[in-house]
Length: 156
Length: 76
Image 1: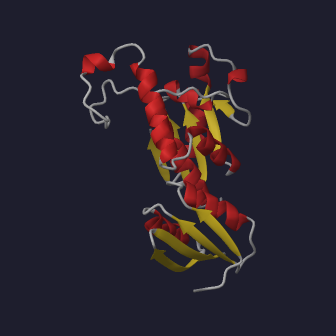
Image 2: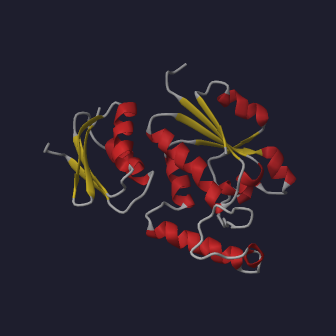
Image 3: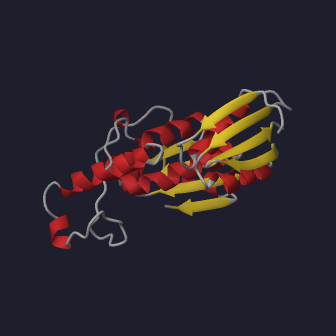
């Protein structure tokens, strides 16, 4: 056994905003010398798709800062989700925040191991060809094999 | 101010990019060499200190001049 620290993350969410924590933490941990693994399950699985098309919504998230107050029923109007997603992407770019793709690439480059939940792949009728190369497929037992020896485990 | 072997301009980049870029640059350097980093992210002051402590690379100097943060890291 090496004395390298280990970080195990479960990524369960597939929206633009929630895509950030697993990749920020994994890439940074790898830079700090952690042996890092992310297990992607349910909606988190879309974070492994070759072509990312992540969106976000203000609905059900009253804490989201808006440039002006928008009543909730207006936020449900067609096109609002696309508008909010595009506004957020622009703001992130302006503030020098990396794109999800960039953080994912940096994580892969830093040898963060990524495991896709095979059960979810079946459930949502995804195909292995939908996903980026260099990942593994497994289930709960695969997660515990790594997580059982980890110093930190995070459920995101 | 220490002499440096390489320089990394991380101006305009936000967390965690300055750290990730610094790590990448250090990977290509020899032990004992010094990397000068320029950043504008105010969070980088604490982050580079934490990075140095956890990776064993020596943070020789950390300073601010005109809204820029300058760090000198000596590779382990």
